[in-house]
Length: 185
Image (cartoon, rainbow, N blue to C red; front, side):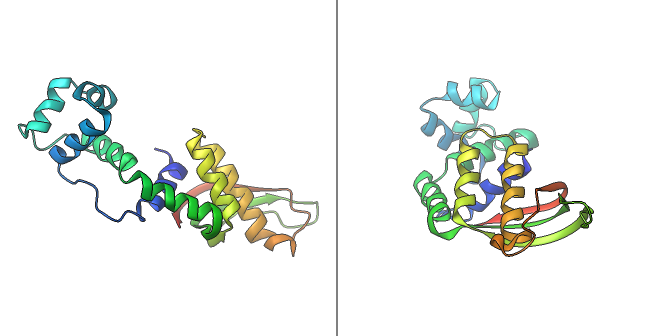
């Protein structure tokens, strides 16, 4: 599970104007239509082509939990692509993104300052440039660690340094032991 990637995905899904299909049959039919065939869906979900056909016909109604989660994730990944793109574009150009997190944070600073790690609960509005960097990195296949580094850099700039008004000598923010993470557009 990718904490940052899933968090960004959940934020974008809040922009959906219509709910994604709920039942396994409807979800499977949607995926078959999107991928233009049962074989491609079967390969993606790691099940047999016959299993996909049974869901499409309504012969199987209730998938096992891990398959249900995979189906749901794949449907939501493809659902309303224009709405998804518009939400990302708005966040990256004008709206920015809000990060709400409870995590252990510390920083590297000159000797004599208190750089002790501690649990902090922050809700910070990040400017559009960081929303753009996060979404671009996610689309480029960035790891959760890379997304975490971008978020830590954003928190350093916006929260700890207040856009250059304080803590100018701060070098690096450490972002570990994440208890809670949520993004909002």
